[in-house]
Image (cartoon, rainbow, N blue to C red):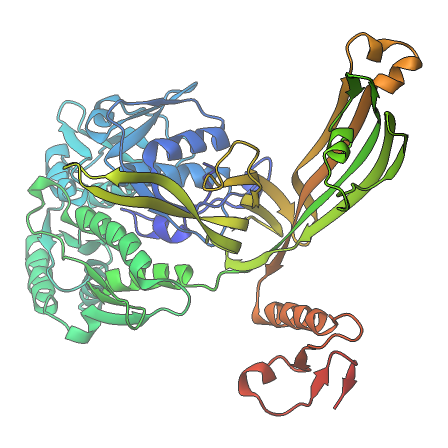
Length: 634
């Protein structure tokens, strides 16, 4: 299974967002996209290993399923950072060991994390943050509630430093907080958990309030941590108490409408989007809870889908709603459509040649002769023909000579037949959506018959299973960057065949030709996906032993038949990309015009009457119709 796409929106809802790398950072300049539904996590690891060229060593406990949808492409570095974010959401981490990458549970990653930061913002790393002014134990108590449950923060009293193990992004965030605390010198600090207000907004309000009241920029400071929604108050005791009182006054429930929202989707399916957003919401809740010593719990996030209106109902904090709105806006975009046209071309022909000599003679009570059936007519059938009845003569040349006691029959036939079969099924579908078209019959196949039941009573019945016979085309298109498409194609052509001699007519036989493949094609490109060339040469010789092998003279004692059959079968595809309504309208008009140009044979009794504008097919008014038997308006 080819995997390629996780959305930028997913990155924005992790514990912390990280910037997407631009295409210029990728030496090859290649871009990938990921569209997966209930895919195995191990398959994702394998695919990312192929894209990045990294050797992945998997922990035996690695399992789980992921669902990913994307409308934009990202480069190799973005794919890897995205992969690390998905791993973290499943409770696993990737440890870069240079020549290989270890995939282990987060609990073990904390003890094995490398100090090398690398380029991936979600990679698990360990950093030692030295302090110049503050005390490590005090800073540790403040910082610990700001990290997730699966991260690690501990003070080192001997070196007055903090040891932090977390993703590179989170470690950088902790570094900034520690720098602020350490820069405050020997000032005291406290933390305050907010229940309703947004910590970063309250911190900005508190800092401005202190500055306006005459306090210098270094007198006191409020730091807001958005992930845990906590305030860190730094400064003298009196100012910290003043800021704490003001923060509690600001931490009141807001308008109920600010915490709920109904989003009507224009292009996406509400049920599918609900599953994706619920997974992201759980990740946001876990991040908001912080460590076990963090105290208050994070606000719950509720996401429900209203399928009748194709809408999402969101309940979360205003900051979380803003993040969810951003994700929904990026996911709820129109998807392109793909028209897939197939041409199934089968050209077959056969040449039959038959030549035979048969004779019969009688002398007194002795009679003899030769008779061969591969010419379609035997001399024996003529001798047994009732007087006055005309025999059934086969095609070809037939010459008969003879008298009362002798007769000879010479048959010769040469036939040449050719068959051309062209089927052109087509179907339109959305990007990443499977589509199927079937043109054929639903044929019953006998699967069993019974004459008596278990008690021995007579109760005959027959079991039948119905199967589709005809032309089937299944296509799942994936639109890559640019105008290149990856198509998963299944094409099957089947037909009923006549039963061979000795086979019951109830035993239905079908001839089937099928192709299953995954291909790459450009927009509008005609590409062949498979074919079959079959030559069947048969020679049948019937002769009298010994006599039929005599040169020249042996022709009187043998009959020959040569059959040469040739079959060519090819399947062609042409995908057409429709990115907007104008493209779809133009293509529909061309197809309709082609249909109107079809005319039955001259003198046909039933012509088609079609309006010039296809919209008139549905309202039945307006334009005059065209009599396609004559091609003239009336």
